[in-house]
Length: 173
Image 1 (tube, rainbow, N blue to C red):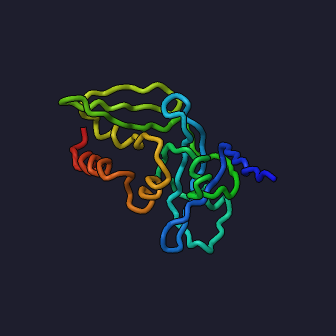
Image 2 (cartoon, rainbow, N blue to C red):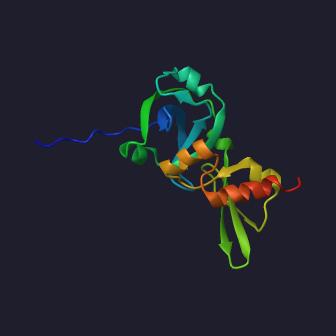
Protein backbone atom coordinates (compact mmCIF):
# COMPACT_ATOMS: atom_id res chain seq x y z
CA UNK A 1 0.00 0.00 0.00
CA UNK A 2 1.59 3.20 -1.18
CA UNK A 3 0.51 6.47 0.32
CA UNK A 4 0.55 9.17 -2.32
CA UNK A 5 1.68 12.65 -1.34
CA UNK A 6 -0.94 15.27 -1.90
CA UNK A 7 -0.10 17.35 -4.95
CA UNK A 8 0.15 21.03 -4.17
CA UNK A 9 -1.31 23.20 -6.92
CA UNK A 10 -0.33 26.86 -6.82
CA UNK A 11 -2.09 29.42 -9.00
CA UNK A 12 -1.99 33.20 -9.32
CA UNK A 13 -4.48 34.67 -6.88
CA UNK A 14 -3.95 31.97 -4.24
CA UNK A 15 -3.87 33.30 -0.69
CA UNK A 16 -1.74 31.82 2.07
CA UNK A 17 -1.69 32.14 5.84
CA UNK A 18 1.56 32.62 7.72
CA UNK A 19 1.44 31.75 11.42
CA UNK A 20 3.55 34.09 13.54
CA UNK A 21 4.68 33.96 17.16
CA UNK A 22 2.31 35.08 19.88
CA UNK A 23 -0.93 33.65 18.46
CA UNK A 24 -0.81 35.96 15.44
CA UNK A 25 -1.04 35.37 11.71
CA UNK A 26 -0.96 37.31 8.47
CA UNK A 27 -1.54 36.63 4.79
CA UNK A 28 0.05 36.91 1.39
CA UNK A 29 -1.18 36.43 -2.16
CA UNK A 30 0.59 34.79 -5.09
CA UNK A 31 0.48 37.48 -7.77
CA UNK A 32 2.49 35.71 -10.47
CA UNK A 33 5.85 34.30 -11.50
CA UNK A 34 9.03 36.12 -12.51
CA UNK A 35 10.34 33.86 -15.27
CA UNK A 36 12.97 36.31 -16.57
CA UNK A 37 15.09 36.84 -13.45
CA UNK A 38 14.62 34.51 -10.49
CA UNK A 39 12.15 32.01 -11.95
CA UNK A 40 10.16 32.09 -8.73
CA UNK A 41 6.79 33.18 -7.44
CA UNK A 42 6.12 36.84 -6.68
CA UNK A 43 4.02 37.45 -3.57
CA UNK A 44 2.22 40.40 -2.08
CA UNK A 45 2.38 40.35 1.72
CA UNK A 46 -0.44 42.21 3.45
CA UNK A 47 0.24 44.43 6.43
CA UNK A 48 -2.54 43.54 8.86
CA UNK A 49 -1.88 40.90 11.48
CA UNK A 50 -4.76 38.89 12.95
CA UNK A 51 -5.18 36.84 16.07
CA UNK A 52 -5.03 33.12 15.25
CA UNK A 53 -8.70 32.64 16.06
CA UNK A 54 -9.82 35.37 13.61
CA UNK A 55 -11.05 34.22 10.20
CA UNK A 56 -11.04 37.20 7.80
CA UNK A 57 -12.75 36.85 4.44
CA UNK A 58 -10.77 36.76 1.20
CA UNK A 59 -12.14 40.24 0.43
CA UNK A 60 -10.90 41.60 3.77
CA UNK A 61 -7.46 40.11 3.22
CA UNK A 62 -6.89 41.40 -0.32
CA UNK A 63 -8.27 44.86 0.44
CA UNK A 64 -5.62 45.36 3.13
CA UNK A 65 -2.59 47.62 2.70
CA UNK A 66 0.43 46.01 1.04
CA UNK A 67 3.38 45.60 3.39
CA UNK A 68 5.90 44.39 0.78
CA UNK A 69 6.43 42.29 -2.34
CA UNK A 70 8.93 39.46 -2.59
CA UNK A 71 10.11 36.47 -4.59
CA UNK A 72 9.90 33.01 -3.02
CA UNK A 73 9.14 29.38 -3.85
CA UNK A 74 5.61 28.97 -2.50
CA UNK A 75 5.20 25.23 -3.20
CA UNK A 76 8.38 24.33 -1.33
CA UNK A 77 7.44 26.30 1.81
CA UNK A 78 3.89 24.93 1.81
CA UNK A 79 5.36 21.40 1.66
CA UNK A 80 7.66 22.29 4.57
CA UNK A 81 4.66 23.45 6.62
CA UNK A 82 5.46 27.16 6.84
CA UNK A 83 2.40 28.38 4.93
CA UNK A 84 -1.17 27.16 4.44
CA UNK A 85 -3.25 27.82 1.35
CA UNK A 86 -6.65 29.22 2.34
CA UNK A 87 -8.27 30.15 -0.97
CA UNK A 88 -8.04 32.26 -4.10
CA UNK A 89 -9.07 35.82 -4.86
CA UNK A 90 -8.76 38.46 -7.55
CA UNK A 91 -5.33 40.01 -7.91
CA UNK A 92 -5.60 43.74 -7.29
CA UNK A 93 -1.86 44.41 -7.46
CA UNK A 94 -0.09 44.88 -10.79
CA UNK A 95 2.92 42.60 -11.10
CA UNK A 96 4.27 44.35 -14.20
CA UNK A 97 4.88 47.60 -12.29
CA UNK A 98 7.09 46.05 -9.61
CA UNK A 99 10.82 46.77 -9.46
CA UNK A 100 13.40 44.73 -7.56
CA UNK A 101 17.05 45.34 -6.67
CA UNK A 102 20.09 43.35 -5.68
CA UNK A 103 23.81 43.95 -5.74
CA UNK A 104 27.21 42.35 -5.85
CA UNK A 105 30.52 43.72 -4.68
CA UNK A 106 33.29 43.74 -7.27
CA UNK A 107 36.74 44.62 -5.86
CA UNK A 108 36.33 48.32 -5.01
CA UNK A 109 32.85 49.02 -6.42
CA UNK A 110 29.24 47.85 -6.12
CA UNK A 111 27.20 46.63 -9.05
CA UNK A 112 23.45 47.13 -8.57
CA UNK A 113 20.97 45.14 -10.66
CA UNK A 114 17.46 46.55 -11.07
CA UNK A 115 14.63 44.81 -12.88
CA UNK A 116 10.91 44.83 -13.47
CA UNK A 117 9.17 41.49 -13.10
CA UNK A 118 9.56 39.44 -16.29
CA UNK A 119 12.02 41.92 -17.82
CA UNK A 120 15.79 41.89 -18.21
CA UNK A 121 17.88 43.60 -15.56
CA UNK A 122 19.71 46.92 -15.86
CA UNK A 123 23.10 47.44 -14.23
CA UNK A 124 24.25 50.44 -12.21
CA UNK A 125 27.78 50.97 -10.94
CA UNK A 126 28.23 52.14 -7.33
CA UNK A 127 25.38 54.22 -5.85
CA UNK A 128 21.73 54.32 -6.84
CA UNK A 129 19.66 57.46 -6.51
CA UNK A 130 17.59 57.51 -3.34
CA UNK A 131 14.43 57.65 -5.48
CA UNK A 132 15.36 54.53 -7.48
CA UNK A 133 16.49 52.69 -4.33
CA UNK A 134 13.16 53.36 -2.59
CA UNK A 135 11.14 52.38 -5.68
CA UNK A 136 12.61 48.86 -5.66
CA UNK A 137 11.93 45.94 -3.37
CA UNK A 138 14.85 43.69 -2.40
CA UNK A 139 15.24 41.01 -5.03
CA UNK A 140 16.12 37.45 -4.08
CA UNK A 141 14.09 34.29 -3.84
CA UNK A 142 13.72 34.44 -0.08
CA UNK A 143 13.11 31.39 2.11
CA UNK A 144 10.11 31.33 4.46
CA UNK A 145 12.21 32.29 7.48
CA UNK A 146 13.36 35.52 5.78
CA UNK A 147 9.79 36.39 4.76
CA UNK A 148 8.72 35.90 8.40
CA UNK A 149 11.68 37.99 9.62
CA UNK A 150 10.65 40.82 7.28
CA UNK A 151 7.08 40.66 8.64
CA UNK A 152 8.12 40.63 12.29
CA UNK A 153 11.33 42.72 12.28
CA UNK A 154 10.96 44.89 9.19
CA UNK A 155 13.92 43.48 7.22
CA UNK A 156 15.00 40.30 5.40
CA UNK A 157 18.63 40.27 6.52
CA UNK A 158 20.82 42.47 8.70
CA UNK A 159 23.05 43.65 5.86
CA UNK A 160 19.99 44.72 3.82
CA UNK A 161 18.66 46.58 6.83
CA UNK A 162 21.93 48.50 7.17
CA UNK A 163 21.80 49.51 3.49
CA UNK A 164 18.13 50.57 3.89
CA UNK A 165 19.11 52.84 6.80
CA UNK A 166 22.04 54.26 4.82
CA UNK A 167 19.73 55.19 1.93
CA UNK A 168 17.04 56.60 4.26
CA UNK A 169 19.66 59.01 5.61
CA UNK A 170 20.87 60.10 2.15
CA UNK A 171 19.80 63.52 0.90
CA UNK A 172 17.26 63.44 -1.94
CA UNK A 173 18.83 63.83 -5.38
